[in-house]
Image (cartoon, rainbow, N blue to C red; front, side, top):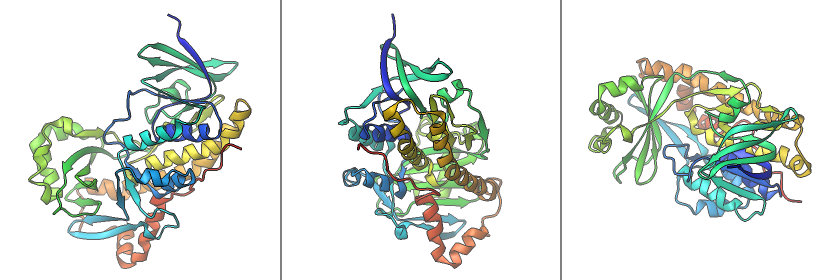
Length: 406
């Protein structure tokens, strides 16, 4: 059977934060855009759920902030850490020059569904669920579209531009032959959920103690926990058995000891294989990579979703006018990479520094009785908590919505 054939000015492969935001921004500006999402819904647990002030500022610029904040969410105004027996505040978002001086915790499926709903009224927006881009179409030395696998057979999309926003395991960037620079990561993360009680501490925090690291996000009725393990260490954790893992979680947060039985099987513990990498070149004629497809981020700071959103805003600002006229030239695609490479590289440099100077020594069993120098400075000069808040909350180059319908 011949594949279904459709056309779009821009085809975005991937309905994650970068892809959905780009689809919304382009459609809002009058571009005919098609977003392909391989899953049938957005319900994937343990994805990036931290919506930072930079992203909330974008929502304000789109006139969507009030409606967005009516969705169920939690607000974090400060971040704390417990190193050994010592508790200290690490970041204070209350002084940021933004409308929202907090990080919003919201399930990513709610965020993506909200973006899809906001884009739906625009006549140029189309979203095809259960449609996975699996092949590139090339013509005259450039990418001219994609073929996608759907429940009804193959779908062929011809487009002036294809944007790969299909995640850190991007199929399209591999097909395009784009080279990845691996910066390394000494850890993986086990995500788990445990119920929360009113008597529990309220703050979201990270715990460093006894060769172990665990980050706990207060989600109101439950704790979303990231238990950090050495890179490739999942088989050793499983070999030790689930009771030993429950005991390790309880040692990190003793008030959870009567709840770790909620981890009934290893199905309740999800592995995130951590990678920190980026493409040397984000584009080919007719193809651009953004978000995790262009740069995988460490979970340190929870900044990945917000870097992806910033990529989408910059891409829409630079690509939108060209897409209204025709196919963007390679110079325009290169301009997107030039715009976003500095904040990407600087954020990754900070993440690698934290990995090497804090995460690796702790996982290797280094003593936590002596705080690292940056934390000692923050303890002595509390005003310094504003610096990590700015780096986490706004990043190195916050983007603003410029492209809109004339």
